[in-house]
Image 1 (cartoon, rainbow, N blue to C red):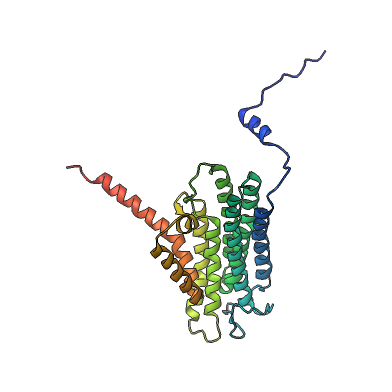
Image 2: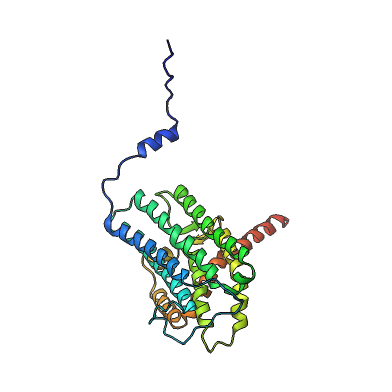
Length: 303
């Protein structure tokens, strides 16, 4: 006669997982639509970037004619404009990503479902889309070293996925949401998309700075690799939206923000990539200064 199977009590982790496994009966409509808007923008950013054909020479592309970026003709042959449109779709995805959380908090419909869905959409919009765009916006370097560019392009979404998974595990309800551990994936994607807008500015027919374009094409893939490493780092980054726009601020603070937004819109071709790069590089530089300063203080004698 066979012995009865021994009953084993589930582990605490297994017990917590069993308790958390429940059927979703309702979903917040408005925050979910904003989150899916983020995903749709990321998807179409990939579609538009896919219009750009693989480079057959190391010649820097130039726009066929000067155009207003706000009046796009969706010309499939205009590769530089497709790169710029893909970048703006990534920035639009950032807007949706910022709004879904705010709408969920205002409507008090924040849930684990929304948080998980947000991370899944972020992987596409802020991981896959900028990684794919990276290959298309550097035709000269992609033609010279296609393996290097594609490897770095694949590394970028991998780092974004790791960063988002770590954020979901380590962030709790008591978090102040004023700082991030590591570079946020939307800011990382914005730093890549910002250079696409800069390339559109540099590749106008009257462009006389082709050497700047060529130099940036060789620098940008390695910059993207550094951005990927910063996403999985633990260097503290400020939450710009919460620190600058939430709560009450002085009148001078509001006026400064207004003039900053006007300056960005007037010279957006240069201001956006510079601000994005400054946000990416500023905290690591400040963190390095603080580490060196603390080490110097430890080595100094007390008397």
